[in-house]
Amino acid sequence: MRYILFLLTFILAASSTISRSIYTNIPTHKNIIVETATDSTKPLEQLSIKEKLNAHIIHFTGAVMSDTFVLTHFSRAFVADQYSDFHKPGKYSNGIASLPKSIATSLDGIAIPEKTRLVVYNNLNLKGDILIDVTGPAIINNSSFESSDFYAVANKKNYSRELQEIFPQKLRRWSGSGTKGMSNWVTFSFEILVVN
Image (cartoon, rainbow, N blue to C red):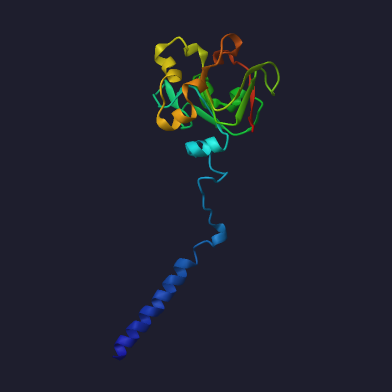
């Protein structure tokens, strides 16, 4: 009996020492960071479609904007891919520097959430003529693809349900001709504003 009591005492003492050594290395609760879906430190491309829309984040892409992703051709609105840049409301004095992924292949599509205004200027530092001034919801695709049956379908087809409700065909358009066409945006800047 004495042997059993000794053994139990030894086990309890050992487990107490082990517990103390395990828990002394755990940081206190004030050092633990819990990241939520609405955490402002989360990268914009990692936000959900709904979070991007609610935060007035504009999606720029080097592919034609659509509801499905097709490598080298189409981006899905508000879903990150290798052609996409996302920007929240603010002033962007150098469009080329602000859109590295989109510009790398050529800026070809923009998706603008509801109550979000995009103004693009033809010079740096928000100066010069206005190339585009659009309040969303809207999708704008590069007019250089307007005559292509393959790409033009992006502005004509029914999108998947979630995106079709936000961006029906009447809210999709081409960027315009001449200097207003996205292919001719050599030096530009832009601002994103929240509107009521």
